Image (cartoon, rainbow, N blue to C red; front, side):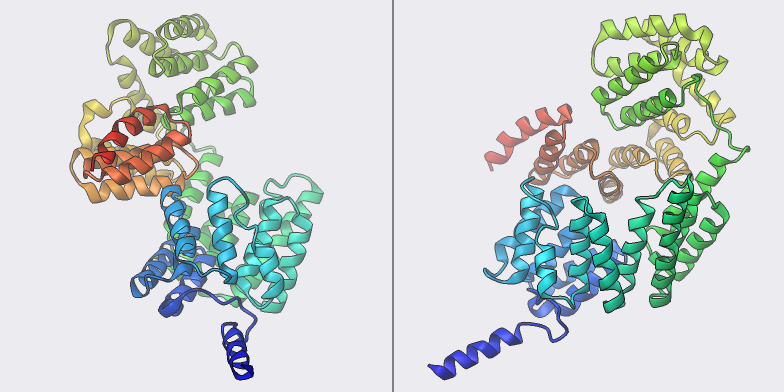
Length: 491
């Protein structure tokens, strides 16, 4: 009996790493898992996802691969499946299983994603990935001072670049808009941590990307562009490189006197910001939210003529015909307060509503020629004419807009539907999936990915995405869920 106890004790000790790292449930996929974790913590998410998938192919029981595939995924439908599978195949009593349980609880709204990290990190102090999770627990629970202290100690002791990067962002995020001396001083603390990250990981594109963002937030566009370009040169496959470089160029242009954008006619910056929110929500098919934003803009500036016109437009999509006419009447009467361009837009909307013409589209197309740097106007040339100009023109205009301003993610959505129309299903899926990952908190991208799966006759996946979209408040998805449930049940 004594020999058996000693043997079991040796096995227990052997499951733990001599480096103080938490043992993982990787099986034969240990190499793929650890390489994936390293890639994920340097924000190489696409590479990380592929490595975790390779690990699962090599060992289907790699529970840790499923867990971290979920961590590297933004798509909530896929993430849920990965977390649930990880917990299902995990080993009872294994320390990592606590992370899997927390992940499933979180995805079900029953706890925090990083709840299990602090206690495990206390036990496995040599695990830099647990250290990052323990810090994220503190940050998500509004214990920033303790979290920063934890991270400073871990980064210094473990000497890992990604921990220094997290430290830098603890200042970049909390002091993102420098304006007073105290905030400026705190914001500047990020710089030395990013420099340490670069020292430790000179071949990681994310290190230069972080430095670029540091300068971009300060309004130093030239330094930001230089470092975004450097990130691209270090790793052209880094998924943020091209995108962030384009974003920085766009922001520099918008901040210059050369920017050709259409200004809204309101004396209130708050009203104009709410109007922009409303336009963004309009393009994401969030009709009720858009209506609220336009209403709030009007509450601040009751002479904001174009806000009435856009509220009328939203009510058209909400099928509130009486409110359409009411708001257009007010917009027309208020148009003397608007610019000549806005007046033309308002009159065109009123005319189209009255006699079913397409005047508004032609007005916007002329305005784009005058204001080519306006993302809203550019998108309008697609959004308002998608059924008239054909999929090739939609794709051409959508790609041009997205290249100019990659933050304008509704362009991905409209391109996805153009690809569907052309029956280029792989391209459609790629566009919709990218929008889901870029706007994981928006309902409409999930609905669109559901439409893709319907098109390729995968009703099970379509139902999952429609259910996610409906859960997030998109009413158009609810009827799709109802019709699909009976079809899937009959299989």
